[in-house]
Image (tube, rainbow, N blue to C red; front, side, top):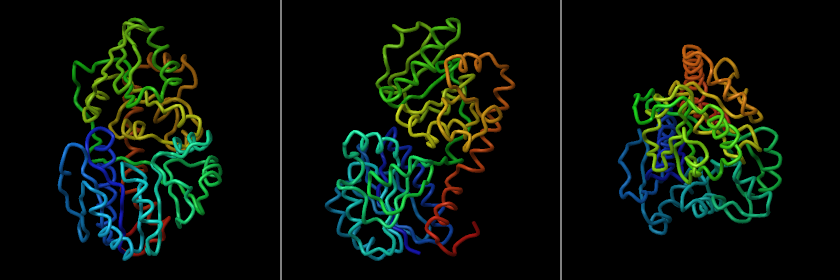
Length: 356
């Protein structure tokens, strides 16, 4: 079957991670015999790193208007046209897919909690097409659970099904210890402004209580943590490509959901899955559905209050290391790109091209 996928975007930081995951999913589809056409925008850094799709085609562009006619032709001739709601052309690509003559018109919302948060206050999510999601044969979302009913109602989508984030085993491996990243607890917060509640309760308060322990906070828009606690090392210009080394250099990793993700629940974040895939010992904040993805107490630790984090930091290192290895085994078995392709094929009822 011919599958055309829009919304791939190269670049740095979040765009680079997005591209890595989607390229892995495209390759997994292709090796099952599907003819995949990947439409990918080159990021601010210039030309996208070249890649090949077995039996498929890679269309790269830096001007949507220039690629749109060819993209529309490819979508019209497809069995599935899938628009990933990501990047500067998210709305344009979604509109093209919705108006196409593809046999199945699908949209994937990679940030359903943010969508719901915006819709609940009467705003239109910037990454979704204006006017709701009616007209798509199927909408896939990054989170599931009871919130799907609210999502369906507020977006007007005809059918909504979760497709959770995934990891890439070849890329998300153990890192190397680096002295600059050494700490007792580390946390990656790509946008700390969206994690205010969780950072206060599960990171800053533990740091204030355990003055002799070293805490490492990496990411963007960080608070003035030095003024809050002198034992916090802030890395405001952290390169996300070094995440593996940061996790390998800390005894324990706080995999923190954004505040909107915690309220919605059923949202295994990229940060949680990547930390697990790299074998890090993880303490996660509690959100509805977390036990569906990892077993608390055996694969990860779960914190509902500050004391849960400080208690986790007192556990023996060999116990934490065992947790990390069990989390890695679970991530590789149930949360890889290969596994998500199996689920996607089942959702779309795609036949042939591999034994899933």
